[in-house]
Amino acid sequence: MNIGDVARLSGLPAKTIRYYEDIGLVKPQRSANGYRSFQPGDLHKLAFLGRARALGFSIDDCRQLMTLYEDQSRASADVKHIARDHLKRIDAKLEELQQMRATLAALVSSCAGDNRPDCPILADLAATPKPG
Image 1: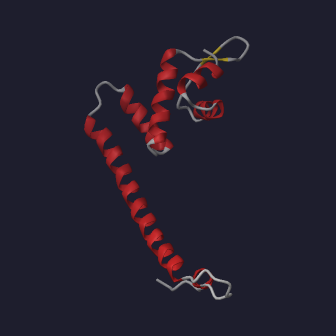
Image 2: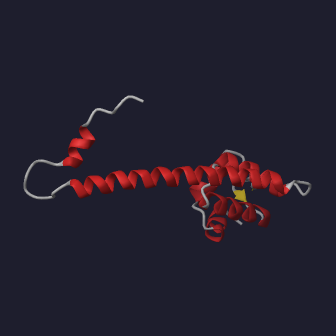
Image 3: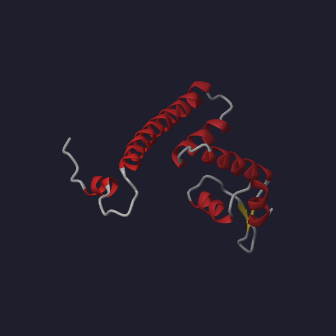
């Protein structure tokens, strides 16, 4: 399969596939003229990477997960550890987003939104951050 075929079948852009090749996540064969030739196993790896990235795993996490996936003697505890760490990062980000939302909701609520120039939203954005 050429890169266009594997892009269509995996749902990944060709640019992403080239990037994954550049960083060593996939290693397609090369024909005599230098064109990439993807095998079914490459397509499977790309689909795996696409799903992992859609779940927000980092490139480093993906590299580790791919290594574990290919290791038939792996311990599922190693996979779970990577997933649990990622879940903790997602939970922390969700909490941060909830705090951001609460702050912004309070600012929006405090703004009259009328023709006067006074605006608590702009005043808050212009405030000097408190140390600590």
